[in-house]
Length: 171
Image (cartoon, rainbow, N blue to C red; front, side, top):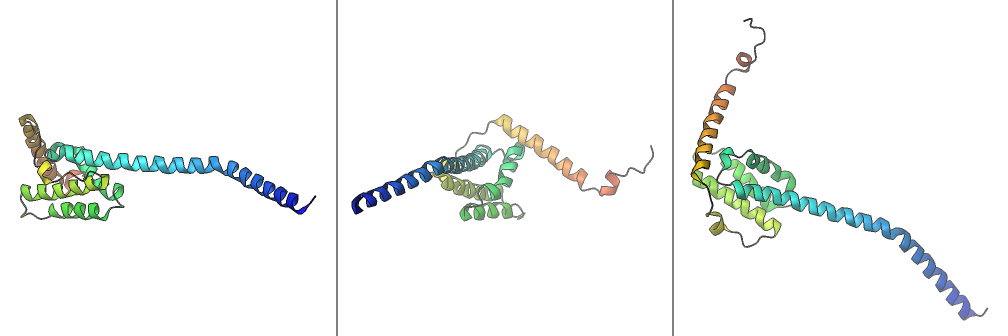
């Protein structure tokens, strides 16, 4: 065997080893890539659910429990977007300010919805779109009804806890 044949044989063996390793690792890498793609898809689905819930219920907040759930999911689902978290924080803080009007609160909510839209890639959604909505009269009456029920619930639960749950009283 001359030098050339030895060099070609060595190269062939190296190519065989590299090919064997690549064939062995390919399925593992494919699974890892597939898992990452599934995680990204699930995150997008969760983000879109929050966004769609908020935009769909933004003028029916009072009677929409899923609205409250979606608001409370934002810090987890959008933890990677500082602009969303800032808009969320401003919206939450606005609810502790008794001097703000419903219009002010809606403005904070619109800012939050726009931040969510931008995170999802919807760059053309702005206040001009968010001021338009459909809210039938029947929904308004449901909101008022839910509001009254919520007020009664709050009143009842602000009583002294011992008076509500005293199990030592005998009938």
